[in-house]
Length: 197
Image (cartoon, rainbow, N blue to C red; front, top):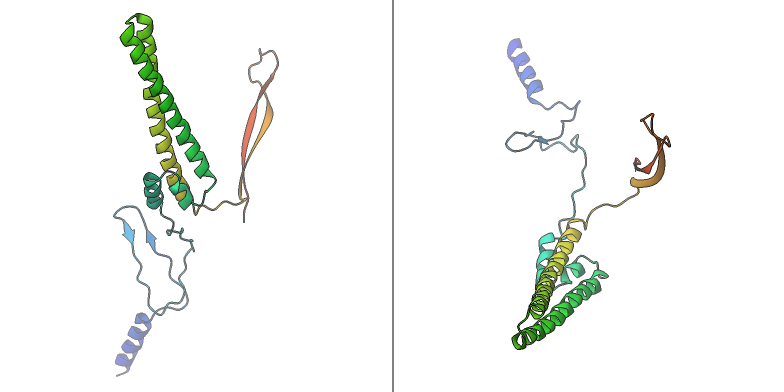
């Protein structure tokens, strides 16, 4: 009888959770390797590092869709309202270049149809090249405003603080070549300062 009581006592001690130590955090490694820890529902706190989750309410895909539908709308979605006039100014310059070069290209076609010589042919090719470059410029400006909206949306919840700073200063370095005339090399020194919280 005494052995049965001892066995029940031993089983109850081994089966109960140990309160002297809290479990480690859940570790998940890359791809298919993972270690999962089962935590008792009684446990109040786990021994983990608290990591703040980024704000996923601001979507980069929405910013892309908005800027594809209407140029500048993605910048407005990101709260960068000062970029909207810049976007429309760049689109206006590209549009003006298209109109101006297309008008001169049409005039060059008329001039070439009246007198087909090498000079008019070169002028015609030049205005055609300028017109095509203007269309390419419009596409580039449109694509850049989409990329800008995407990058701003990705960096929307990026934490900017004074813990990281870059300092650029002029520097003089001694020359390692003994036959050099001045003995000094001029340059710039870039240093990153990391400050603890």
